[in-house]
Length: 428
Image (tube, rainbow, N blue to C red; front, side):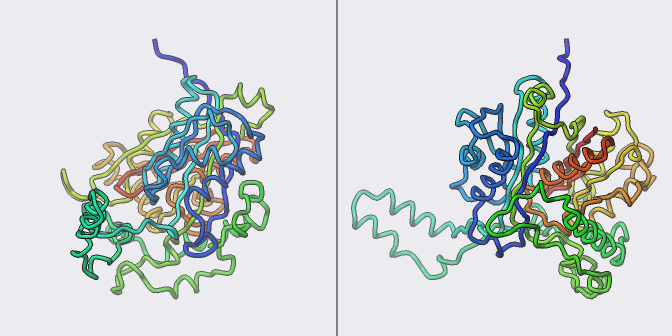
């Protein structure tokens, strides 16, 4: 007999300000930032010394020394050492994935409460060296005597000292995410002006949210920074229109630094619990996570025609809607991760396309959404995008927004590297 699932409460969230790379957090590592975000959540909800059922988080770009990143950050944040923790990595969908995983354990009654989160820095990337230098180092380390330890180093040449940084391209295509998105924009005929308009709206909404104090209790100061430093309250359509394309520099290029997410450092986390656990501690229930889905696309053309790298949410969302018995229009808020403004517009166009939905999704078109309900507190273009932290940032923002409204339903859609999509529904 199937086990009845319990409601999963989103109690609240915390994050540190999102910072442009090689700036405010240049001297901070993933563990520093994740510990700070966890610590802010622990302090906010009186969890110091508490033993929670599980903590799950992760980073996309991390050093080998951070192999147990989440466990170390959880202990550093003041949770009882008996709280277990583990790492996850699903590119930009990492912390939405950890949120779903913690929620599933709570729903099944395996744990009462847990923390989900993510962190990323591109200011402290691991630097690797070539295979020859690695072989020399390892051979020297294995040698039994001083002469034999020195001998391998005689083969070293200056070219062997050239470092390499983590690749930003997809291994199966050799194209960067931005180059892939340019192909999507061309396929869907997404105009540059429409991309700039979405980016402008993202900055307007984010600036207004900060000005109105919406983020004050969600964001904890860190390393001298008190707010996200990528938000441009003074931007304008004219300024955005003046930027040059960066991924396709030909006259047909449309993606710019202004309508794409900036390289960003930051961390975010969410506290989830059973309603009984939250009630016993007089903690709020901001919203409930009710449904989720993941999907992937054949972006490399391994089994058929190539699909757009960032189009997997077009599959995940309708599958999730079918299980929830909802239509795309049954939402008060749409939180669609703005990896690029073009990606959001391609996704919306696909859901409106009868041809695409019939051919790819085997169903009628999902239809259009009310654009006024899209990312009302700003999106990733304005706020920034520390890869693994974005999901938790969105969950925390949406949960607070639903709590402030008193009721409602929100949809979360996140595209990821590797051609995957992670989606969820929050309700109150």
